[in-house]
Length: 211
Image (tube, rainbow, N blue to C red):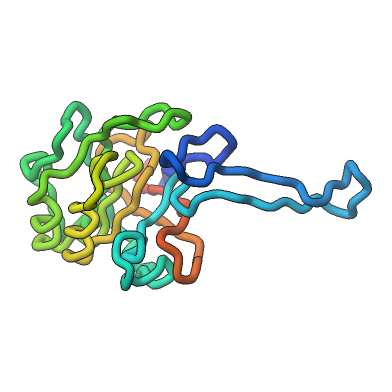
């Protein structure tokens, strides 16, 4: 058996684009061996929505739960990568033939954010009936390769609310550029940040072959 691993986490480094107005990533060394310290000690400053992350209900609901309350089992298990490149609206027809019961975690490769040093002006978005459709078919997680499941200029975040109403966790800004469409096992582990509106994630996809 051969295991193939795809790291679908956007590398976090200076220059990674963040949502306009969010805190950019910064790494500072507080103590260095070069300056006589026993060890190097650094600190990180960034938005919790930097790079690949999960959204918590608190992000769009003042009474919602924080990132630490997201069920870890939702973030690990069978998943399918679906290629919707070229579609500005992601409608139900693009999921024809998907066995949601076997792969209740859906990752969508839109191709809408290829240069992570530039924040996109526009991104592909879900049709308004898709969250309820997914929820009715047992989907528990939706991942996208763009910074949001809603339009960049949205003020009401309808898809965020609709996904939450269907008990679907949003995994945003996954890097699917090198991942073929198909079935995988997803492991997406967020930092256990208590009460936060989001949490950075290290996410991988694995697949087994008989080679």
